[in-house]
Amino acid sequence: MNICATDTLPQTSLRWLVLDLNSFFASCEQQEDPRLRGQPLAVVPMLADTTCAIAASYEAKAFGIKTGTGVGEAKRLCPALRLVVARPKLYVEYHHRILEAIETCVPVEDVMSVDEVACRLDPLQQQPETARALAQSIKNAVRAQVGPCLTSSVGIAANRLLAKLASDMQKPDGLTILHPEAMPAAILHLKIEDICGIGRNMAERLRQAGIADMPALWAADAQSLRRVWGGVVGLRFHALLHGADLPSITHPRRSIGHQHVLPPEDRRMDRAAPVIRQLLARAAERLRREGFYCRRLMLDIKWTQHLGHHVAERRFHETQDTGELLKILMPLWNAAPSLRPLRVGVVLADLTPQAAHQPDLFDRPKPVALVSAVDKLNNKFGRGTIAYGVGQRSITSKIAFSRVPEMEEF
Image 1 (cartoon, rainbow, N blue to C red):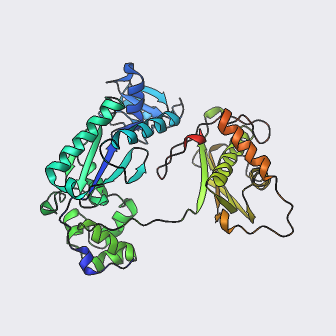
Image 2: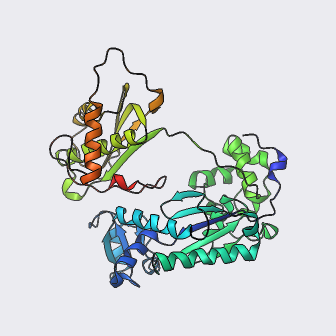
Image 3: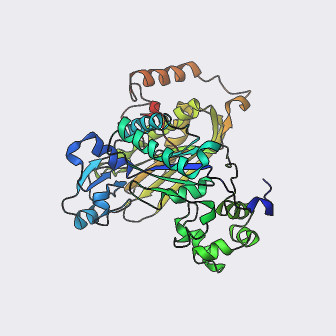
C-alpha cells in the first residue's frame, strides 16, 4: 500500500466504534454465579499456586491482581481471593450472545478478539451526539440481553486504532469519544505504550530515536517513524495516529497450533505424551476444517525450573492426515530430553490451501473418508468420542489473543 503525505491529514468524521468487554472472563463467571458478584475473583487455568491469573475481576484488580499475577502472589495480596478454573467454552458462548446483542443496534464490522469488536459508523451515526447515543444503546443491549455483569468500555474515533485507544481510556463501563478537533490534546497525557501495537521493544526503539512520550510521538514526522519501524508500517502508523482511516492489512494464514500448560501431576514426559497427541489431533482437525495442508511440524516444550525450551521440527510432503502427522510428531517427542515439561505445544506450518494441493505421484492414497468420518463423529457426539491412539486425556480448548475458537473445537 502506498501512503503519501496527503493520507496523513486528519479526518473530520467519527468513523469507528470499538467495544471492549470489561474483565470479560471474570465477568462471565460472575454472571453465571451470583455468589461471585462483588467478590475479588481470579480466573486460572488450574487450581495450583504455581500457575497465574488469566483474568481478574475489578474487585481483585483493586488489590493489585492482574493478568499474569502468580496465584501465590495473588493470594498474598488478597487472602479472600476466589479462584475459578477457566471455562473457555462458556466464554465463547457469551461472546456469540454479545455479538447478537450488539447487532440489534449496529452491524459488527470486525471481531478483534473474544472480548473486543469494531463497528463502522454510517454517515448519520458519525455525529457526536448520535454516536454517543448509539454507544449507550449498545451497552444497554448487552446488559439487558446477556446480563448486568457484562459491562463494557466504548471508544469512538476517526479510525480503529484511535477508537481502541479511546476504549482503554475509561474503565470500567466507560464511553470516550476522541473528537478530531480535540486532537492531540485529548491523548497527550497518555503513555506511548497505551497505543495498541506499541509494546516494550517498540517503545524502547522509539526512545532510542528520541521519542519518549506522546507529545514527541505526535510531533514526529512520517519519515522518522518509518525509520523507527524499518519500513512502510511506520508510515501507516503515522497516518493512523493522525486520524487517517486506512483499510486493515490482511495476512494469509501461516500456521495452526495448540499449546497446553500441564497441571503439576502431569509434568512428566510419559504423562504429557497423551496431551501432545491430543493437541496434534486438534490442530490437524482445524487444518482440515479450514481447508489447508501443511509441510512442516514444530514441537515446543517449555521446561519447569526456568530450564528454557526444547524446539524440534521436521519438514515433509504436504499432508492433512492426523495419522501421518502423529507418525512425524512422536519420534520428535521421544527424542526430547527427559526433563519436567511445564507447557507443551505443536504447530503445523508452511500451509497450502486445499485448492493448491499437489498430491505425491508415488504416495499411497490416504484414508480421507475415514478421517472425515472421525471428525464428523467427534463433532456430533463430543470431542474425544473417537481418539487417535490410547491414553487420550480430555483437555480444554484455549482462547488465543489472535482468534476466537469455533464451537466445534470444544
